[in-house]
Length: 168
Image (cartoon, rainbow, N blue to C red; front, side):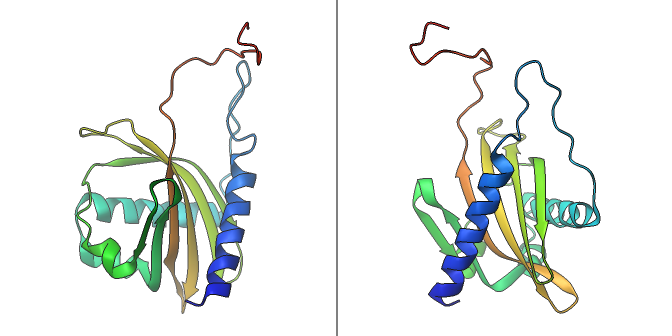
């Protein structure tokens, strides 16, 4: 994939992630926002669940079917950058994941999907990350072109607003 396309894709994913994350969480005392279920939401919710299941079951053939030939994985906070073959070679944790807060921005040949991923079991149970996936239309189906994943801080349970001075 040439650098111009990568930079454009990264900028698009970053903008989508920023737009999706702003105001997505409910403030104390407010009801959580409920996203309406659209066809793209249903379609990519299924695709993301299929990928999570394939990773959980260590189904390398299933994972490979969902990845484009140019797939790359990036985790900027952990300085990780993996090409398709490298990502497939990394042993998956096998831990089941829960996906939440899914948002989809679909275009004719590109879809940007963002969500939070929480590990449901294992030694890192409860660990959360924010994921932005870029899917590209390949013929009549979709394949994952790029995944950007960053760990989220652990939830503290403290939802009380605190003034900048720390005095509440």
